[in-house]
Structure formats: C-alpha cells, structure tokens
Length: 261
Length: 201
Image (tube, rainbow over all chains, first blue to last red; front, side, top):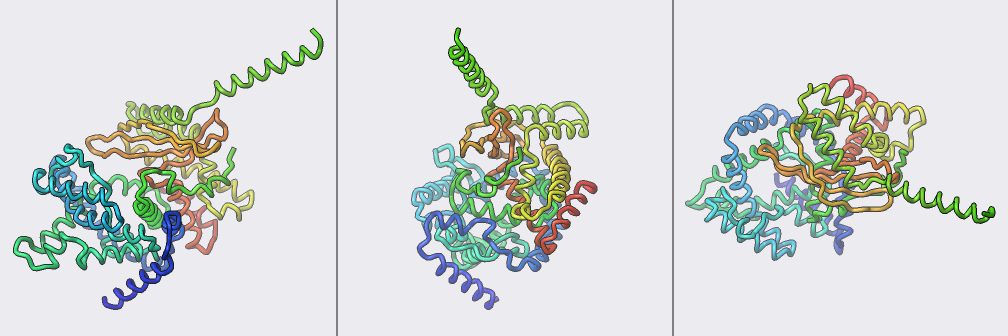
C-alpha cells in the first residue's frame, strides 16, 4: 500500500512539474480523452471484468429492487446523499477560486440539512440557491493544470485516472468532512457504518437511475470497456473545464475532413 | 428588344429565380431537428408492433442521418489506410450496424418529448442545435445537442448526438479504434465484430 501511495505521489508530482504555468487552453488540451493513455489496459480490462461480475451479481439486482421503492422515497434518498457530497464540493470550489459557488453551496448545505431535514428536501432551491455542479479533488487538480496520467480501473469504484485516484485518496486523508466525522476521527455522534451506509446507498441510487442507459450501452457496444473509457474521459474533461457550453470541449479537426456528399 | 436587353432580362429572371429557390429550399437546422424529433416521437407512441416501429425509425434515420459520414468519422485515422473495396465493405457493414444500434437504443423510449431551444452556427458546414429531452416520472431531463451537417442547406443531416456533453460519435470512434488496436491494427477485426453484432444481437 505504501509503495502504491509513493508511485501515485511521484506520478502526480511529475505531472504538476510538467504542467507548471498552464493556461485554460492547456487545461483543455491536457484533458482531451484521446490524450489519456491506457498504460495498463490488460490489467484494467481484468479489473473491469471483475467489476462487471460484481455488478451482475450484487449491484444491478439490488438497484433493480431499489427501483420498486416509491419514487418520493428514492428522490429524498438521492437528495440526502447528494447533500452530503456538498461537503467535498465546497473545499474544491475554494481551491479552484470559485468563492461565489462555495458560498451558495454552503448555504444550500445549511438550509437543506436543517429546514430540508438532513437533505431529504431541497428548500434551498426555492430560496434562490440553485443546485451547482459537484466538484472533487481530481477536478481541482485538473483545473490547476495537472495532467490526468494513465487511465485506471479501480476495483469496485470503477473508471479513474492517476490524477483522479490521487483526488480520491485526498478525500480519505482529511479532504471529506463527512468521512472525518464518521470514520477518521473518533466522534461520539457518528459511526463508521454511517459513512459506508451513505456511500453504498449513493452508489445504488446512481446505478438505479442509470440501469436503462447502461443496459443500452452494453447491448449496443462492440467493445463495452472502450465505450466506458471514452465516456468517462469525456465527462471528466467537461467537468474540469467547468463549462456548460458544448462547443468548448468539441474537437472539430476530424469532422472537417469528412465529406460524404 | 435588342439582343443585349434580352440577355439582361433573362439573366435577371434566372438570378431572381435561383435566389428564390435557394432561399425557399434551405431548411433551418433547428426546425429540421424539431421535425425529426417529433416524427420519431409519433412513431414511438403509436399503437404498432415493435418490428413496425423499428422499420419506421430506420427509415427516419436513413433520410435524416449522415450514416456514411459518421462511419468515416468513426474510423478515425484508420480510414486513410483503407482500399476502395474495404471502404465499400465497411460502409455497408456500418450502415447495418448503425441502423440496428440506433433503432435498439431509441426503442427504449416510450414517449420521448424533445424541445429544441437554440442553435449555434459553427461554420458553413456545421450547426449545433441544442435541445432538451423533457423529464418524465421515470427519467430526468436530458440535454441533447445535435451536430447538423449543413453543407447542403436544403438537405441538412445529423452527424452526431451529444448527450449531456458526451459525444456518441466520439465514443464510437474510440471504441472502433480500440477494437482495431487490440488486434494489431487489423481492420478485418472490426469487420468481424460488426458482422457479429449485426447477426447476433
């Protein structure tokens, strides 16, 4: 474990060094899906197969069962889990210099946790504090100009990159207040099971919302692994750029050559 | 009327007719997408068998999607290494693959309502049309952008769907590249995979 941590640290160090002084265009080009190498593809494919097995045996059946729960309960559960993720989003808003988003998200968390009963309801939106995009430490590193490094598939957790894995590690070493108060620090108010319970529920909620999309993608792919890799990397590119404008992340170079009529 | 006047009049009439025809035949990309989406929606809610729906969806795709263009794009840099025979074989396979995949994906929706909200012209060849797939009790609202090929303004064609920022064509290109790369660059491996998909699914 120590060795892996050192390798990850060195990888990220060299990425930072190589990207010092990057600007917005550089951030975009560094995060282009096609520029991310799948250095450990055979290992990744093995872990991907294992994850699919777990999904088929555990997650998908549970998610299908979860869909039988009445819709208002599922929506409330999804809201509550999403509310907890604000605790990771706020520090990342600040690290990316987005003070306004940090303020709105903090108010959303306070209002929804209290008035909204532990985040089950979303009264903050009614007060004008609209829902903002989630942010994590991988996105912050990307926004700072850190390259993604190699593409990885993590057991159970799924697609990632070296940079995003470091971001995930950051949440477990003090970057996630919810993890800190439930698991990392000894508090009398919460238990470890509270943390893992919310994480697992969040995963099932996400899986249940995307059952049809995943099924359709799997049925219509000739290489499901490659499809997931492409979609994950495109999604991360867009999130790191923090842009809703679709033309910001499009690459027209290949399209320009295509003449079919 | 002398010959000079006659030629001027004829030229003027031809010019006006041509301008009028060009303008009247050109189709705005946003209207094109809205009409295609409405047509597909009508098919999906109609009271006909799944097979009939599939056939109707395929005919909509054939007239509104640039299948050949998407196929060439999906090959990425490999398209430059193909012989004419291989290109022809690939185009045929891709068309069958696309129509099967397209109708299969779309038939999952029972009552899709798509509202076009805006469009952005990138250049003379491309316009991006933005739309929303309206939320239902079961599914959330989904943002869908359409890359419309407008080189022939009277016959615009869809070249890509970008769902919540994720390009379907780009995903397809990277998927095909992965298949070819993992078989030492052999294009026949892609042909085999496409054939299997067409025959098996």
